Figure (cartoon, rainbow, N blue to C red):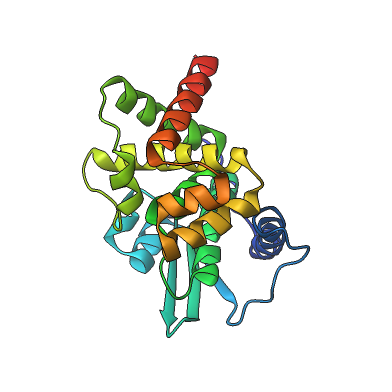
Length: 232
Ligand SMILES: [Zn+2]
């Protein structure tokens, strides 16, 4: 059986980008309108996997979206999103994820934000079925007691390799989801910024009035177990 895939139109993607940017500024930063980016973000639509792979390299075998940002002396010099645009709805959903990465580069041009916070927020903006897969990876890690200790998760600078990568994704997404429902979304970005300046324990105290990492871990585990139980 062959499925009929509809590719997105370029003008539709451009409109979608502007609307998305406005929406993210509103929900994440509490700002009524988005700032005009200079330079603008290039969005490349690739009609086929080989064309996408030529642009993003060998890391693109498993993905349909990728972002590349060049920053020098605290200023963004270049930003670009590559999308494998074989299927309209998958491409537009990948765009939402990559836009979070581009937005984070704009917000944190000096010191890179914690990897878990950026990736976790991007994953929260993925499609329902992708989020369900990440949640399932986390469920398995909880069952086999292979979750990443939070001190290590918070200190992770690069994506883990092997099986820990799936745990990293599921756990990062869940921790960000927990934090964003503790308070307003713009408080989450204030917390991420403070993490880069004063460390996560002090940031947890200042923004969420959580006294220690142990208290935080306890709250997060209760939240995730309740949420998994409600879904099974
Ligand atoms: Zn990502």
